[in-house]
Length: 299
Image (cartoon, rainbow, N blue to C red; front, top):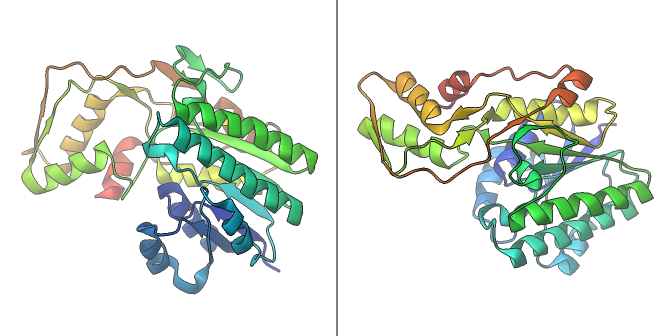
């Protein structure tokens, strides 16, 4: 019998890509989606009857729990659902997401002998450290998003220990890919259409972009490998300014493209190296895509 994977947050960018790979890897997949989600139609168009869909609203878990009663199996659980990713400083929205997801997790753990729970964490849990950031670096989140993600991690770990369920959190750094949205997609679109793009800052902020296919490879290893720790940093290991990334995009799209940068200093970003040595050494995982390869795959 096929193993069943439940993905909380199937309409998210990472969630959709994860589902595609899980299906290709031979798993039965169940996913949740938010009521009135504009992305649900895209999700259904992509997978149709290949997976099972369950409506879950983190703001109304009493009703959502009843919907989850339609499940008959859950071997692995991925937690990719969160409402506060675009409201990083909204305390109420992020607290509501954490509390709703904890209720959903509690229900699944009470009902099923789940083999492993994998939480998609974030670099925001560390706050703004300097230098090399390992999994042993103290968490000091600044945003409401980072604070609630960290609180969720601590509570989820306790719940899983009570049920003797293996719990893993991936703290993932800046994933990019087709249909991700954000600055890279915007710049690509403008350069392809207009051959020109204006940035209103000097784009000096630091990023460490990881291509979506490499991220999904890492997530799959979470259920395929016996891991020895709870927290894993996932990153490409390349610390580069946004301007350098954009110049690479310009070169790939064409020599006749131009990007103009503003004089205003970019919003300060954390200047640290996100060390993923622990995960690489335990699994043998290495990013297969450099930044340029990822951009070429996108366009």
